[in-house]
Amino acid sequence: MRLVIHQNHEKASLWAAAHIANKIKTYDQSKPFVLGLPTGSSPLVIYKEFINMVKKGELSFKNVRTFNMDEYIGIPSDHPQSYRTFMMENLFKHVDIDHKHIHLLDGLAKDLQKECENYEKAIVDEGGIELFLGGMGTDGHIAFNEPGSSLTSRTRIKSLTEETKSANSRFFDGDIKKVPGTALTVGVGTVMDAREVVIIVTGRNKARALKACVEDGINHMWTLSCLQMHPKAILVCDDAATEELKVGTVNYFKDIEKDNINN
Ligand code: GLP
Image: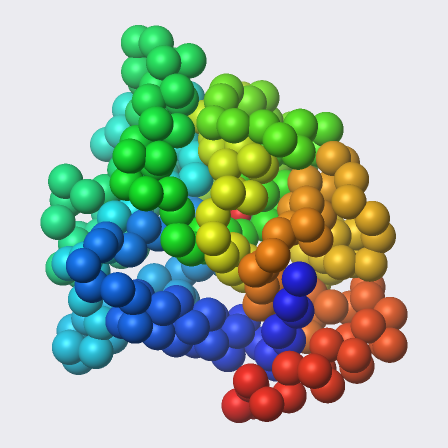
């Protein structure tokens, strides 16, 4: 697992955007680039930068297929806080992606179990995910794989913890009662199958979870820690998120990544 530490959220995001754009541009153009994507505040600057790059003609999503990580159950897809709406507003409607290449889970599907099975099959049919971009919850979750999730889990229904509902209530008028209690999410195993995983982790409120995921062992109570087993995982952080790490850990990663960062 690589830890690439930047001064702030903006610099971390621009680095992650450039890294992913470079992967898309240098990919074998005879096959689609399959990109996994998150929602939340963490990827917003990355998405803005993708839009800038597309507008400047430096990046194209014509050869990209996307799979989003998760979606709330029980709210319509055109609800202002659905993850479909989030993705349309913050990325898809501003870039040159063919909308039939966008995959999002349907939280109002009649048969939610079948919806999850079909999603896993669609990923396989597209050749598997080349790069999964993600964020991390304050409790160390990846996608909506809350503490205690199986580290081999696949796409399925999950109940959300009070901590996650409280964190996400800022998007629902600050009212935790308005936050859906369940969601569809890719599993930890689904993320682990991606050929590369890039996670953006910034802010002091992620420091406790980052410490657990980087310095402690693999543990289902901090599901992102499973990335310690991934052959190609990068956590892109800012200084604030590293505040609970040991000085030696921070110095170690800053040293081995010094040629890859222009801070
Ligand atoms: C939600 C999402 C996660 C995301 C997390 C962090 O719980 N399901 O995919 O990583 O929030 O959100 P934020 O980036 O807003 O801190």
